[in-house]
Length: 131
Image (cartoon, rainbow, N blue to C red):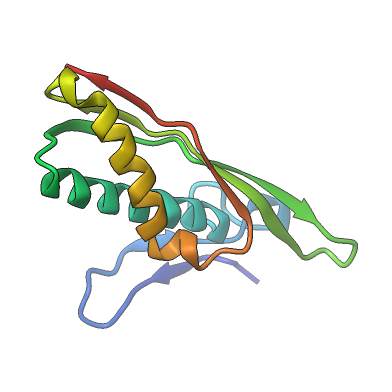
């Protein structure tokens, strides 16, 4: 049976094409739950960071992340993430605010709903530079 599905929520745009990881007979061109888990962590942290930067008058001109994770499979075929690393590349407008921007990054880590709901280690390797 196909593992393909569409992710939707009442009242919101539907159209996220999901499947299982190819190891579990899924379609590699669709998002799998592991992709979505990493994306959720990355997005939640980014949104908190952008909110806190706005509050602290730090202008962010670009933000991208390439989150990665380590999965460990158990003998029964299940498994879990043991570690996730967020690798955001952030550009801010004012170089004199770089130290403050890093402090705000650490503050965002404490606020992230998704990270606070996880039982795996979440590491951070931010790269904050100025335009």
